Length: 133
Image (cartoon, rainbow, N blue to C red; front, side, top):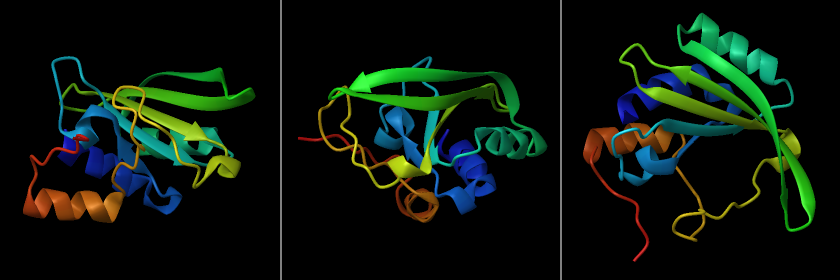
């Protein structure tokens, strides 16, 4: 799944995608999906790039959440790889770039892996886990 994530992220490289979730952490279970986050103000452009790269788009949707009293909107792209793995790409506005998020499961900062870091991980230790102690 990390290899498939790298392929998708390479397509989106100019938008600084970050692999997050269980595939980043190395805690993949049955039903896990590939979670990628990026910031861009034109999510339709991201959808177009993904369609051109042959990612099967299942659906797209806007979601709104309130965190710390502030309303946040995000565009979610749900897809499926050629190998049948589910993918969720979250596109937030560029004003959200660089903002630290906390992992809802572990409570630590959700740093994830960018393209370069994922390439290095796959070359050196593809099964590494990133779980706080």
